[in-house]
Image 1 (cartoon, one colour):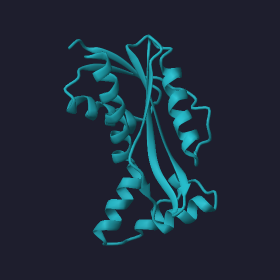
Image 2 (cartoon, rainbow, N blue to C red):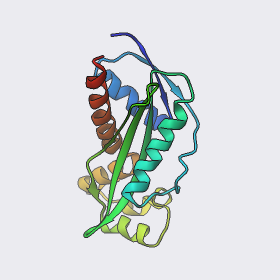
Image 3 (cartoon, rainbow, N blue to C red):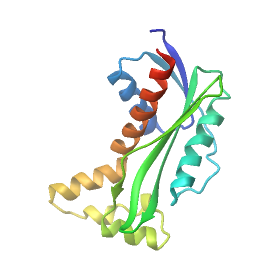
Length: 170
């Protein structure tokens, strides 16, 4: 397999590192170029359609760098019958116009986080109150999941990359 050039529509070290980990898991060699882009959506998207569109916008903007394909990653929320769920979309766009969006699994947020979103506060700025000196290992695990978003981002990336790479027969 040839070494690929992948552009990613983010400057987030966290998202870039998750992409590198997924590529390493798949034994794919790639040079990754980070591109600062505007997602053209709200800072805290709270609708599935908006989260998906943010990932598409990021991927399309990142493709302006001449690469084999680009990736856009967007994490957001959607309010279902039981409250807000957290999830991620990853979109791949290639130089031939192919586009693939994949959604991660969803996670129903605890009541603490529900309250923040219902009050239209920015969740990322209000995470510390949940863990608040707790020794509960489950709360610590949930805090890490919500704070760093790793399982959502990796899950969406893996789904999108599998579909794309199988199609392209890399």
